[in-house]
Length: 243
Image 1 (tube, one colour):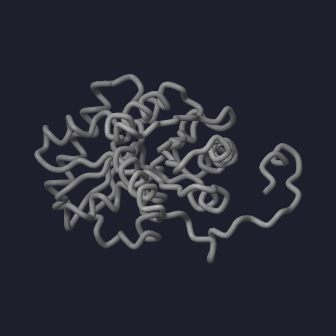
Image 2: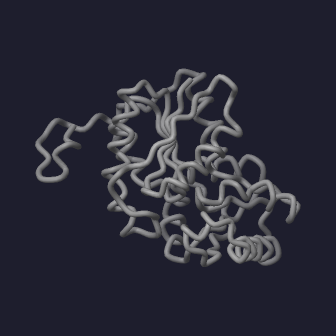
Image 3: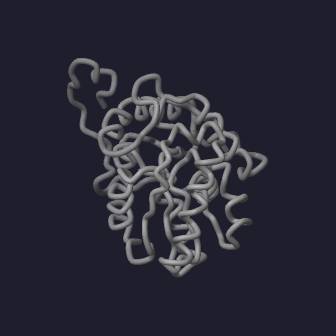
């Protein structure tokens, strides 16, 4: 099967890291097609960045659909543009945030999320409520590490993330931790060993769930809000995105 993994920001090094994380857990027969848009922000940190990341990301998804993708994975923990992607994509779409939450809920009664910056806390909390998992999440914590700092394998950034996991165990009684950024994908195993609890990487979780959907032959329902968009004219720079 062919899984399309899209990094909604435009940073190539992060796309490469995400692709490596995806390939490390994919089935031997699964091909990972990792892409990024040519338009949009270099990192996604909060609502403003999300808005500008969506058009380019949807363009990647439409291209991958035409190239025969069996499923799509949105590799941004805020699940940037997930609902719009499900409406336009022919293949099923999974966001790494939703995948990480569900995977953690299967192995722990209470889990915590450790993300990058405080500006991302409310978007993540909103998604937890939307997915019906807010009651399972003890707390969403921010390590106050900029997304692009994760590209440098920065010791200070790792220490800050580790400190938040320690606090989540001590203060929030978390039994598992979900890493709240695709840029943390390469840290999960190390942090799990350090802290002695399950640490969930959303990229890995999304790959395994996407493979399951494809193997079961399940696709996005078109009976509700994910019905295909009605044909209409889109003006200006958005004209290539018209349904």
